[in-house]
Image 1: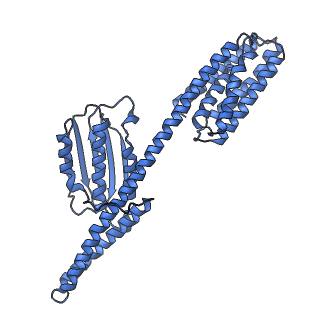
Image 2 (image 1 turned 60 degrees about the vertical axis):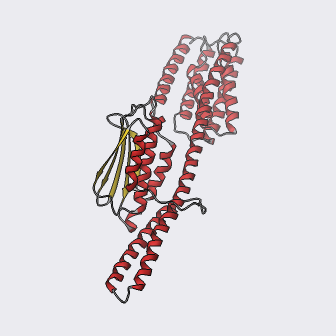
Image 3 (image 1 turned 45 degrees about the vertical axis):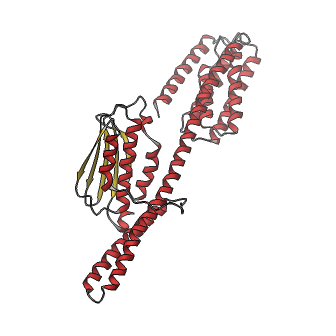
Length: 384
């Protein structure tokens, strides 16, 4: 349970105790005793509505909100119609519940039913002061409460809108990333199949003169074919749309990192340095290109989001089974850490996952921002 929900829950308990004190102060009033009986259970019911985790478009949340608003209005009608006095109490814990449930409906409720439940809740809030002794005189307070509740609901609608916008952006990035997968797959297959054809043609001409070289060529053909099939299984698994007209372009890999860092440094601002541990030759093409894309996207985010960075370090470490990539910078963190995460990293995470690896991004222990990626090197089925 988050800090916000904990604070609201604590405030609900405090207001419930306050309602009990008001009821005790008007113990001689039958209306005051009647009010506290349904008001506190309604406050508890409101807590049961907004406390659980809700998903956007929740029908359950919306229906419960309609029922809660209807019951609250019913209690108000019964209390106001009795002609008694409550000593000024209106059910403050219940009022808080009405406002919070209204926010939850605006944030997570069903798009169509949400308007109905919001109407019930707003009406329940505006008539709530009628439970007090001078209910009609407090009608203006009810209108002020509605303005407050509507403002809070507007915040919920805005949060819902911004989340929808972000999801659309992420979906667009993923579509673009899948199109990029298709281009890379096209290049990758062309690269290996061309080599296979050339080696097969050469083996046919030297079969009689040098049989040993034929065996070596066959071994190379087998290795290239197995690597191509493994990459196809991984990459086609994440593709949802193809780009048959994509142009054939050279693949950029770890061998092209030095020019990339030189361009980054030449642009001014932070200076980029490359640290390599272990040999980088012989890496599978899809691993090499994925590592390059990780570094390129991380450096792009340094340029876009880092606050006054002076350095960006790119570290590559190869082990027998993994290639680890880390990109760090010393830029000061902004006020909101979530602003540092670009949409490109969301699509890039899917790309890295397609080769069996993982990608993480977040603030560093000593400040700045860190992007970590791990890419498996093992060939064949072990890389699935």
